[in-house]
Image 1 (tube, rainbow, N blue to C red):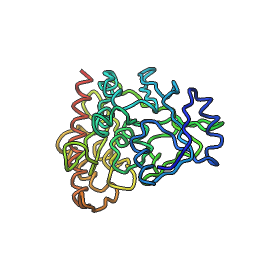
Image 2: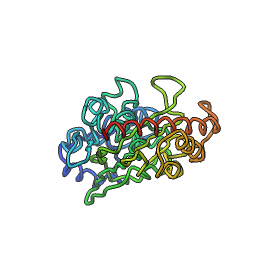
Image 3: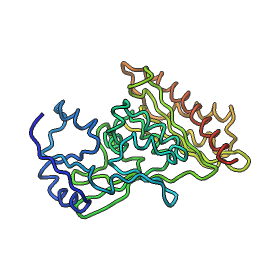
Image 4: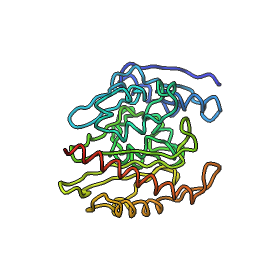
Length: 292
């Protein structure tokens, strides 16, 4: 690995100062490092500076307040898994984050890092998209909020500028009639990459019909995609076998999956339908239970 400067600011103001020359001094943000350090050793990235954000208070926030869940950019997956309220209120997001790496990796890896790695098969992204999550981004003299949906523009590429970093992620907490779920398919039970992953959040009315829904599917395109076709198949209907069959059929048309050593394109389409059926059934059951 090449030589580089290591800096660890203790405030957002100090981080912003360091970002002022992040273009002339190529800088990479370090949170967990479980992807970045491996990529640096492989020669895929050669930054002149690593900006460690773990000592900044705002990047370590993990709480639920004012109807929103807040997850700081430096919060590791293990901390999220230990947060009872988040797991109870946002089970789909928690399920997805729990699948990031091994137990050892979970102690370092961050959900924001999983998002920034921009893998088409990243587990957290479909769940976060379905949950309506957004991210707080800062630069030297600016701040903006971006939806997770559309943040990745290609494998390994995001909307983040070279002189920007993510402070935190926020997602609205579901109300009593809303629930979510996430599932993926992998060839192995543990430590594998999703062949397909599906996240969903849906809202039922008093009669048990779908009043609103968001569905996102990963690993069927260069980036995770929203699935409005699936939503259209269930909106206004009870989540029964007929609706689930329509949703599964619609899911097969989402994206343009590839064939590789882990699965053919046809297999990925089939799995997208199977997982969509399962995820919507689970989310509907959770929504009914939350309504009681």
